[in-house]
Length: 290
Ligand code: CO
Image (cartoon, rainbow, N blue to C red; front, side):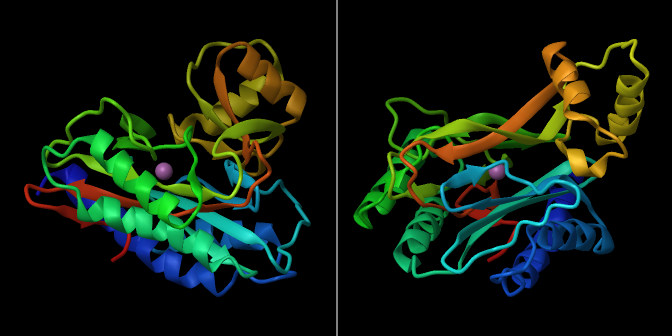
């Protein structure tokens, strides 16, 4: 077995454990920060590192929400809570997500879970990603919901949690054929809204894309501190001191990429399900669960 496959599988086993442990902890009045820290600390305790900050996106938010330092926000009765978590060992990443229902949204959650299951059941070496998109879309539509068209499944490469191929959550004219041994994440999102996400003005996640010298002392300190994450996304709360004004400057100057919270444009509720799989000759091996 290659190093990439072996370490991805180990990272995936750790996430499979954390997935199970986190579900019962998401409850009304519990702080989001407590859950994010639980997930990130458990990944380390079990022998990996977070591949990106624990994303906790609620209701119409679909992705890229993570709490701030000292964040006091709590879960509420009725919330649809997406927990998206990543772990890596020496850069080899596993990525998984689940939705916790604090209300009565069983069908919305089953729509993304079934779409994920049906897509995985159709994976084998040579399958076209356009076909998988069609499977995901038709499953979600059978439940009466829409897939989110601008959030996708993706490849995973060392220290890069989002690489080609793109696996759309709807039927496209053209796709790419998945190769045996490819490590990919399948990630359907279902909504009762418009089926598209847009950025809203809140950013807590960044990554380093283009390291270059900077003059300002505080910017230099931040760059030094994030070096260890290489090209992986990190949370502002992980840093000692990171004022928005400095982070925005680093984004403007092209050193950092920012990941603003993505929210459903029709203010619909959003559910998500995700597993990392390894493409095999006749099927797929799920590394982040069963
Ligand atoms: Co993903």
